[in-house]
Image 1 (cartoon, one colour):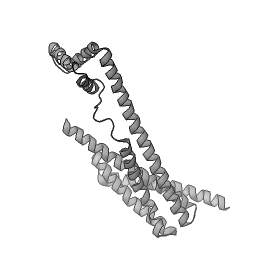
Image 2 (tube, helix red, strand yellow):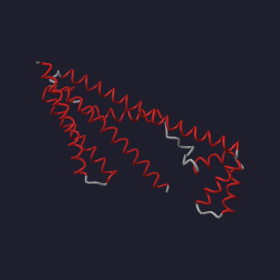
Image 3 (cartoon, one colour):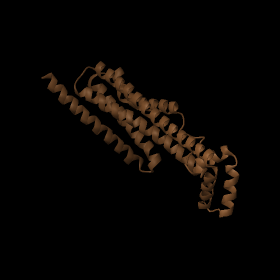
Image 4 (cartoon, one colour):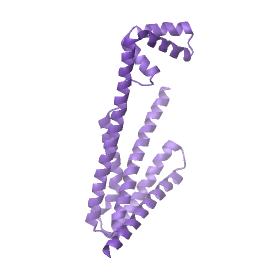
Length: 233
């Protein structure tokens, strides 16, 4: 069970890393290609890409902070309510514990004896009821909201800088093609990372990620081209 929990935790961390980087890469690649399609200057594309990176990473970080903090506050409130119930109706909570352990396979008299021992200490009773009744581990209330926010910001930024970086050193179509090639390579690697979770073929999943990313970039490039031509007369 412990090994399974460790695998689940590692899987969740890898999933968050892959999806965070993928979000940053695909969204900023699409943004950069849209601006490039409008035939704006390389400096404008670079500034737009960096602004997209900062805005997207900040938004992701704020969303992650809110999600983790809200979950933590919800769990804390549920534990507080349980503590109030133990203080107000210890006998009723003792009966709940006995029923929980009977459902786990203990004989009725053994379950009642165990429940009586646990309820005698309020802290132990609260910890046990939080785990057994609420399904909450009081020692793990969703992790640090600030750590989650910083991680989300960092992962999104890593993905988002990839399509922008060629415009720092190159210009024109050379920069556009370099951005597409660099992004395609990164998308393939992200697809390969996904296979660690799914067990699917690296080639299939990698090429699928590349296809989806380039299709999104193609749409925004065409839209930018259309709008650029319309505005240009």
